[in-house]
Image (cartoon, rainbow, N blue to C red):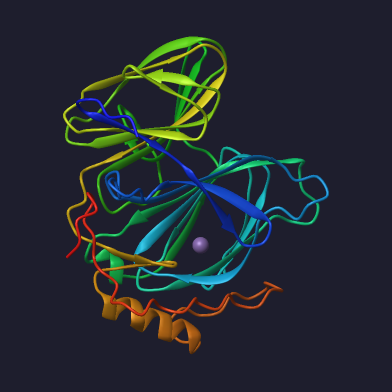
Length: 306
Ligand code: MN
């Protein structure tokens, strides 16, 4: 890990997701759990999925979070316990709000493109929203701006004058920055936000740090701009938000505030309560893993336990 005065380079680590997919996990990281309310960052691909099933994630529950699915390549079929059934293609947003509880499945259809590349992100819900109703939104068109070889698309939240139509519950931003050629581009930032820049493809120099594909640079709050330089085509994703002060207990697919809440969510899922069923999905529900023998601890965004 390389650290300068106000930025931290966070390398990802590979995590198997089901039998067929390996993802690169950037958050949570040991010392840096969150960026704003963003509490979970998985980058998958680019993978060649010719003759392979691609993403195969059977019905599983969520609580206390929103899931954000963003594709660069490939296609994913989403179903959830609200009855939503939605194909997502590159450049579109699937946003699922768990509230108190929802279940969903995500599958690459049998007839799919050759490539798969994208992000799966979680946003922690603040008190109030985290026990509220579940919801699902698909946004096929998102605001974007082009400046020479650089296109910025605001996927979630707002950046400058652009605001995503997606429902959010804390001030935040998730935006894709694509350079089609060598470029030097300055992004205006909200000084009350902390930020991170993830390189999805190519490489970039950001705030004096050289970032290779699959790395995330954390940037402290107080910045009004960040300059991204690329030597050729590259794709980055900007994450940011107001620092999230509530310590979280994150276990399996649940985000809660206490050990007891997680135990209760797990029991409800295993008993077929609270989360509903995912109709139309051929695969059976994913059983929850066993809980650890020690109590789950809440951690704040710096990793401090409570
Ligand atoms: Mn999920």
